[in-house]
Length: 520
Ligand code: KIV
Ligand code: ZN
Image 1 (tube, rainbow, N blue to C red):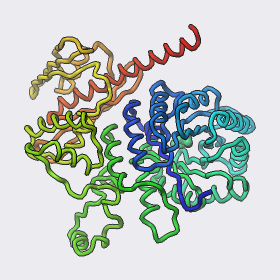
Image 2 (cartoon, rainbow, N blue to C red; image 1 turned 60 degrees about the vertical axis):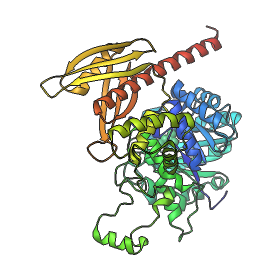
Image 3 (tube, rainbow, N blue to C red; image 1 turned 180 degrees about the vertical axis):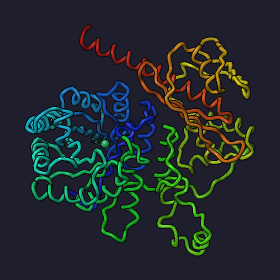
Image 4 (spheres, rainbow, N blue to C red; image 1 turned 45 degrees about the vertical axis):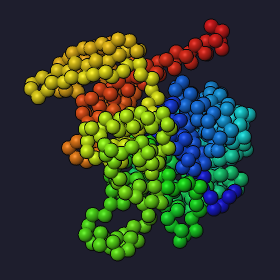
């Protein structure tokens, strides 16, 4: 076991996606996976293939394209899940199957309703089956931190005997404190010397705000893999934030902490890419990637910073990729300036995307005097690289509001056909616009959440709308940006509806493929 190197296992695309409102299309996942590869993560957990055809496709796409990192697929400890995981990884250069079963008394008795013996047997069978497909098998004892140690040792021993190469000990419900994680690993090692033959991993949730501290305590006790997610995305309060655990290991060079293979200057661009795609932004005071993480407000602090930065700064913002300046572009800036600013912001934009971005940039420059970095990122995430097919295409919107009722006339094209318009009335302009769109698409759409934020400062700011809808029982998110928030909302709404069309088409294709397979 390599002692001074910690494997960074990124689960943004799997546990991260389980965060409410963070669902991503396969193409969006691929885009994030490419950024994770550039960031230097060792393992990308690309999804949970049995959970949906979308997830299966996402893992396939990531596995097919990325050759350097290990690509992992999640599977419960049962035969069908494992088959799907193996299928999703067929084209991977470095495949890993990550199989798990709950081990705590509450999960065994109330959720799985199985005995301890059965749990051990399922573990053994699952790991053996996974090893028949791939050499790299990770086993997780879900809710490990609430599992009595003697039983945890039994399950882990079975997993190692069956061929697991990584043993993950998740704090599934974020209940543990750092000393609990450290003693769990140390005591387990004493009880089970075979643990030294595998990589021990930690997977900490942030329900008590301790995920980073717990992960580091795990490393102190000998864990050599940390499971984490960009911006701390994940179930409930999230997973340990990749940027926090990595920078904690990199900044404290005075201690004998092991290091990671992360290219830290890619942290900020990756964080921005993710929040741009899912529309969930880290809070301003979020460590490392929040808007205020390197802002110094108090006079004494500013004075100290001017005299010597290290008085109040423990890391150089550039070391995590925060751009040096907020360069302002304007109406007269050319393609070249735009391209090089995107590059400085950490995005290599392909020629065809640059053309589209430049057209949007010019349109925006007619409305705004100064185009800031945030505007550019907004153009990039909302106006270009849009990989959801335009089944419903936005054409025009006219709104009248301010009185008791608002009225909206929306015009869209369906499947490239002639433009069609509808008019609706409601108690607000966005509701009226959505009602008009509903008439045109003829679907029952439940709006579950809608957020509006200003992407840039000033009166002529770009407004970003993020929303979640439910169509036929399935959740989809949409994002749109414009200097007019009602337009942004309709674009976001149509994007979510386009995703729902895409999911239906994918499902139909996967059903057809399976029926060929089964000969029905
Ligand atoms: O939190 C958890 O226990 C998990 C497992 C599937 C590893 O996400
Ligand atoms: Zn988890």
